[in-house]
Structures are given as C-alpha cells and as structure tokens.
Image 1 (tube, rainbow, N blue to C red):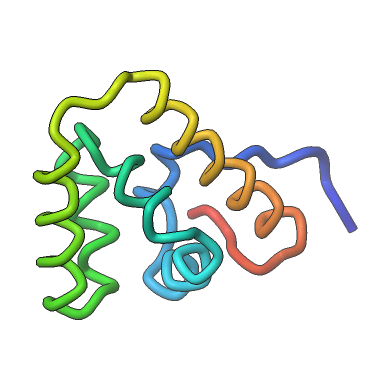
Image 2: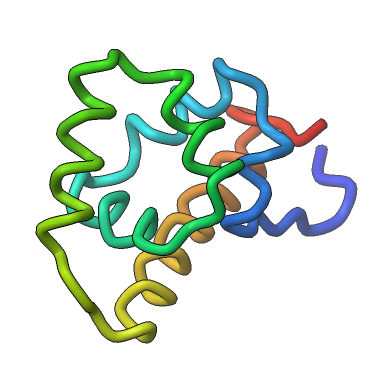
Amino acid sequence: MKKGKSIFQFDDFLRLDELSIQKLLREIEAPILTIALKNAPTAIKEKIYLTMPKSAVFLYEEDIKFLGEIPEERITEARGNISAIGTKLLEEGEISLS
C-alpha cells in the first residue's frame, strides 16, 4: 500500500493535524522532545504546544530553560530520533501530512 517512501522531518510538525501530533508525541520520550524543542522555531513549538495541556507546556518550557546551552549535535540527534518515529508512523498510516 506504500506509494513510495515517506520521510518525516522535524519541520513537518507544521504539516500535521492535531490528532497526528498527539499520536506522534505519545511515541516520543519527554527528554528527547525537550532537547528537540531547544532552539526550535516558534511556529513548531506553538503547533506542538496547542495539543498539550497548559501544565505540560509550562513544564517543557521550564525544562528547556534548565537545559542551558547544549551542543547542536544533541539537538540534531533528538530531532533525528523524532524524524525516525514520525517516518515509521507515516509508513504505518498512523499519521499523515497535509
């Protein structure tokens, strides 16, 4: 049923609907998401945060502040981990890009 390989990139959060974001977030470990959100574009953070309770958003923002400076490689690695999970869910038909 595959129509070619779909690859999810971190920026694709902007192309997901709310339900797809929630499905993806359930598969991502909190520490990975926290690192991936460090220095992320505001539009991506806002899109993700819209699917979360305000208390969770507050905790993620606090955790991001407490991370301080972290190497760009760690951020890239965390985003790559999320991309792999997103790609898997795309291929399984669990999420879709608009």
